[in-house]
Length: 330
Image: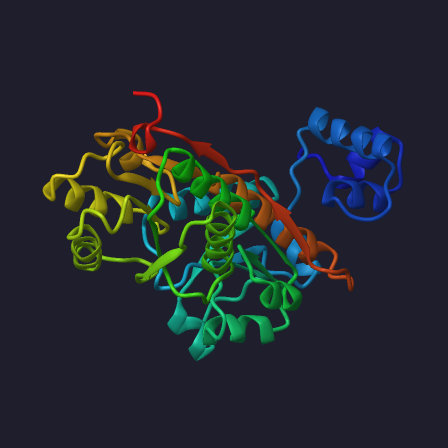
């Protein structure tokens, strides 16, 4: 016979409602009581009827994930998505990918809340989600977006770019350029602040060349030619968006620059390309999977207990990977 929640409660020696709260992770259940209920459920092989529970609580059992059109299939977004899915599955929830058209047309599938990746100020899709009754948790939200959401998770982008910039300057660069997207997201705005602050501390000009959020080959080729034509104008390039630095590397080598010697290169996002390039490229490991996990956990907690709490922001530590392109170990 299939074990029931009442069987779990009886074995754990608690009330039915206490067993229900313990398994759902809600209510004021003492840690030792919760552990006793979980142990009883495991011993009996009890599996909750998620469909019935969601119906009873007027939930769909699914959370939405919105990746803006300007995002891409680059490894950061893939890793982040798997983090969201991992956390949701552990909580017995499904993940539904939402599109821009679905949200703006009001035809998106019903979800209990949404994780929004790289929210941009003024994005009509973001506005539509924030204006809905379902909670929204964001990846790298700016201050104004965070204040209107249920929370978020991401990197300390100011500190991350400060560390990356300091590495370039410590290697001897005095004419750096940051390739960065427009200032419409928490990620790009925070990153620029970190770069500009570190340059100012070192007494060097903080030049910025603006490129699209997801630049294509032509975008990078054009800006690289302009920057590298004059050998004395630029001695370091920090490419913020994932993938951009490889285009700069290609152009630099074609121009006869010695990367890691007379030109330093660094990337705002680490991936397989930066690790295997010749020379290998200094980059920031942002731990995207952990960011996705934190966002999903924050969202699911708010779904379980809407409350009136302040938005919570979780900061996932980054790691700086110093490599040959900034004079690191060969």
